[in-house]
Length: 68
Image 1: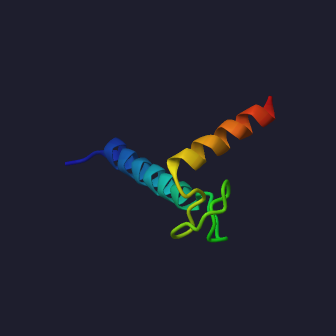
Image 2: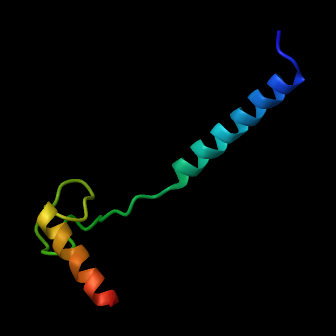
Image 3: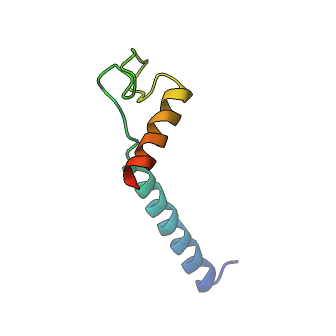
């Protein structure tokens, strides 16, 4: 048999889980709807930003250098 503390704990856990789920749903992944790699402009599948890992790495390296 659960007491008031157990019930309160269950309600708080439920509220936390709902909050986490809502926050997760609001996170937007960056996307690219141009159909081209944002680094080399090669065609890409879906709304991917880069056509390859190499392009992603080059782009990120360029961005880091640009920030400094």
